[in-house]
Figure (cartoon, rainbow, N blue to C red):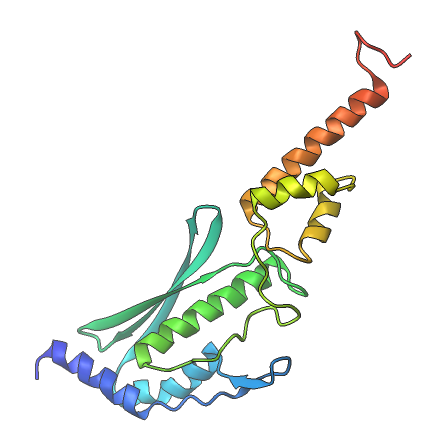
Length: 202
């Protein structure tokens, strides 16, 4: 057996023996799931048994106006390696999480799926990091924004965000458009209030 064939045989051995039970509980949807940590704990003894090393890395990449975590899971036997890649998109916001927690949760999700592909773990029903307080929301598009502007009565973009986020997912691009709209609107209101040097209000 060549060294290249050896890494594939070692991967086959790990795939055959790996048992990663779904020890986590999603109480909202009432089902069990496995986390990246569960897979790591289950695979560590098999890595030692087969004299292999598993390394996981990730990086942030931007596609259009959204940011994604790209995770790479690499199995090595010191001579050769096999790797798989998975992506997860960072949500713009998530209830009860600050920005650092959002990035960590997205990274953990991407890493888990990179390991799923590497070790042939099937997760047919698995949404452990989604916001379970609501279903997936449709995108807030420019067409919807035009209709929104005709009926809105909010004083600033922060107030508008709160209302829109209840029904739609707002991309970074649309958040910028909303802010520009309200900034312009506020500037016009201020001009009407204080007047200008050539056209005072009295």
